[in-house]
Structures are given as C-alpha cells and as structure tokens.
Amino acid sequence: MGRKFFVGGNWKCNGTSEEVKKILTTLNEGKVPSQDVVEVVVSPPFVFLPLVKSSLRPDFHVAAQNCWVKKGGAFTGEVSAEMLVNLGIPWVILGHSERRLILNESNEFVGDKVAYALSQGLKVIACVGETLEQRESGSTVEVVSAQTKAIAERFSNWANVVLAYEPVWAIGTGKVASPAQAQEVHAELRKWLQANVSPDVAATTRIIYGGSVSGANSKELAGQPDVDGFLVGGASLKPEFIDIIKSAEVKKSA
Ligand SMILES: O=C(CO)COP(=O)(O)O
Image (tube, rainbow, N blue to C red; front, side):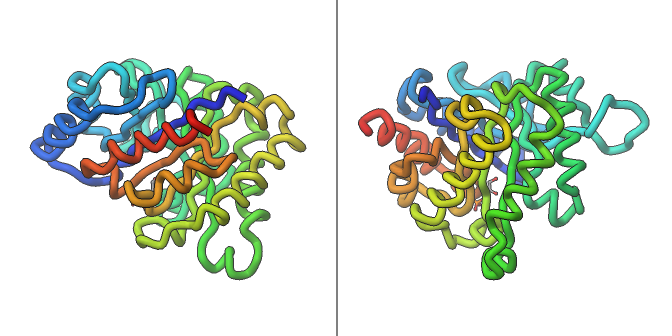
C-alpha cells in the first residue's frame, strides 16, 4: 500500500507574529516520528508563510490555505499558484468547506483550482465533506462523490494530491466523527476512486480526516484502515498537535 501517514495543520485565519513564533518553537522542539513514518505540513495564513517557511524545522513542510484559480494578473486580493511556487511553498489546501460555504466556491471552481495548482507543480490537499443537513438526509456519499468527481475529471495524475474528508458538522464543533463514521466515508471515497479513476490511484492516494481532531481522539481514528492521516484545525495551534502527529505510530505497528 505504502500510504505514508499525513498530518496537516490548518491554522485558518488565526495568529499574530508573536503567536506564530510561539507555535514554531513548539513545533521545532516536538519529538515526533521520522519523515519515513509521517509527513507533516502546516498551513499558516498567507502573510506568515515566509516567516514559517524560514523558521520551521526542515522535516516539516508548509502549505498555503488557498490560491487563485488560474494565472495571476488583475485579480485584486488574490494570491496565485505561481507566487507560491516562486516562494518555494510546496503545498496548498483547496476546497475547504469554509471557502465552499462562506465564499460560495462551487465544486467546479474548486476542481479548476486543483487542476491549475497541480499544473504549476504544487501539491494539493483537496477537501470534501457534507453538511449536517446533507448527512441527515442520507446524501453524504452522493455529496462527497460529486465534490470528488469535479476534482477528478480535471486532471489525471494523483501523485501530488491528498484528499481530505472533512464533515462540516464536525469542524470546530468539538463533535468529532466516530472512527466508524470516518472509516465508512473514507472507504466509500476509496471505492469511488477505484471505480472512477483507477485501482492504483485508489490504493495509493492518502485520504485524511478533518473535524475536531484532538490529541485525545487521534489514535483511535488513526487505527481505521482507510484513515491515512488528519487535517487539524483548532488543535494545530496548540502543543497537542505534536500528540496528533505521534498517532502515526498506530499505523506503523498495525
Ligand atoms: O477545518 C478543519 C481543518 O481544515 C478542522 O477544524 P477543527 O479541527 O478546528 O474542527
């Protein structure tokens, strides 16, 4: 299988330069499994990317939280994929539910962004996930499949893509998906990739979980066969992020 455990820290729109320096100290001093066991990527707001990139330990990497859908130009307020590449930022998070829901990013727009970012050489954490209403109406699989389809139909090489399943009802609510709930959707997404992309892509693509992941629940979630890591919000700003990274050990001993 060879899916290396992946832990992303999405800082969202948080932090001052003083707070960022404090988080960097915690991250840089943290004792975590080696890069052979876990890939760690932290995603500060754009303005802190140069600071984080220059001060972060070399075994951790950085991601932007968004980028423009095509080549830069007259798009006030946007940051282009080319700029991220120019700064040596290897990763970008795209399609986060906060952007889909608050900024009205459609499945197609997210798909276009993912394809463009990949074409420029960025690696992408592509997010999908259903709202509480959609889950309660029984359309979870349909929703995440449609979101994944709009991404998948725009490129063919999945080597630089991590798929993040983030149920909206679990984000920032303290209401984490149970390990069984996460496993069920991850398995469905893998099945979707197998049927619609290829068995090889299904077997090798990391599918990570996000939504109220903490130091207290990460080990049990990591124990699920189709959970290949996490995208962590609130807890990625705290020392417990180190404990979440350590849950990669669960896979090693599995
Ligand atoms: O949205 C998330 C990560 O992208 C999850 O946020 P929380 O971990 O704060 O629930």
